[in-house]
Length: 259
Image 1 (cartoon, rainbow, N blue to C red):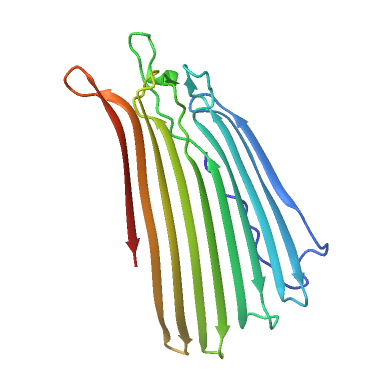
Image 2: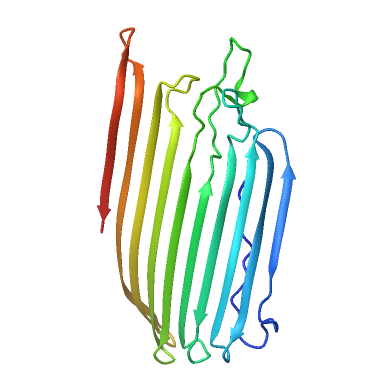
């Protein structure tokens, strides 16, 4: 399931809502057979009207998505293996010190918390008469993929005159993901793997724009720096290829820096 939250434009001036706080929202729910059994969710927006003579505007948007899949783990009895469970919070703040667009500051913050496993793996068992369409898992450790995402964006716009303007954009994002899964894909506790990924990016852009009667120009600088890491740890036993089993306990971690 994929759904984008409703977008409310940032508004200034007397056309904004008169009350100090207005609330808009939506809730949806549906049921189906097959890959998705049921899904519910909602969007809640709290737009704050402009205050202080068209100087300040703010908005807070909250989106929930909830789904329970039709995949069943026959060992643990869980019937929500293929699931969507996440919340996204977005805050926006806009400041115009001169009550016009000559000087403007815009701040956006986004936070996403997810405990989603939308691509559950199913296994067929011809001896038991189980096909992939039955959407069953026979292993003893349920998959888990919790993740968090943080994003901050700060934009500055300054119009020097009718022709020249300077813009600066500062961005930051961080993504953390944990993966826990039954690597032997069986009802026995042979091999479990825990993996983790972390991404962090900082960027800065500065540009000057010129708008003439017949010629427009743009010049700027952009810088980005990111740290990316991914690692996993597995423990248990696995076939050694010669009719026996061998112990497995390994940890691997990768780190990459990009400028």
